[in-house]
Image 1 (cartoon, rainbow, N blue to C red):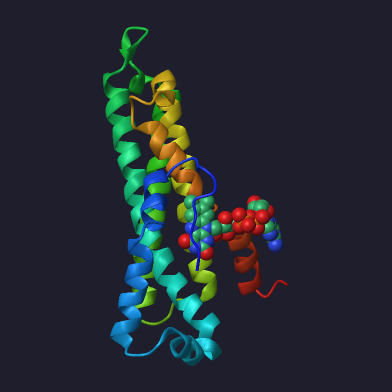
Image 2: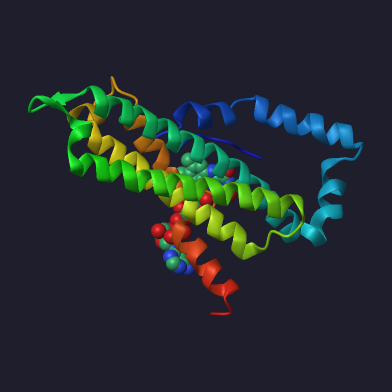
Length: 199
Ligand SMILES: Cc1cc2nc3c(=O)[nH]c(=O)nc-3n(C[C@H](O)[C@H](O)[C@H](O)COP(=O)(O)OP(=O)(O)OC[C@H]3O[C@@H](n4cnc5c(N)ncnc54)[C@H](O)[C@@H]3O)c2cc1C
């Protein structure tokens, strides 16, 4: 198997570089050895259950990623909230302007709702009740929430939001993967529609 970094991406650059480093293939060999089977036989044994295994793995991946993304969205929110209390324009903190306050009110509702959905999905997983549609609802909601919150928080910081010396641009860049990687938002909506019997 060959690995190679062919194009630079918007964010998570170190992460991908590390993944493509030697550790990746060494770890694979070590795990095959632990199983006591040569890789070809291991693959043969799994061949009939490939999609089921893939779906199962995706459920865990989506739960873990969603929890991490809600944590990141909350960090962006808190940073922008603190900034809005300290940044003075027109003689007042910008957080005293209703236009800014409403952004935070909307973001608070989005964040708390999405976080509740992560906990709900974790409960469903624990009780073996997570359906394909539930996974898609979670992936879609959390991805779009993180993207929207990092965008609005960047707006709250104004020009500083766009500058590398502040962390907001990183939340903004990182969050763009949330609606693409591991299945795009459009595909999640297809799955949700399918789970409602619409084909
Ligand atoms: C940083 C990064 C890390 C990644 N890590 C992984 C990983 O670990 N494992 C992995 O398997 N993949 C990974 N991916 C790949 C990722 O899952 C794909 O990029 C993603 O699924 C979209 O596929 P695509 O890029 O081929 O886009 P395309 O399939 O070409 O889609 C382009 C656009 O068309 C839309 N579209 C396509 N088909 C439909 C449809 N039927 N209905 C409606 N809209 C549609 C898409 O939603 C999207 O907006 C990673 C990608 C990135 C950028």
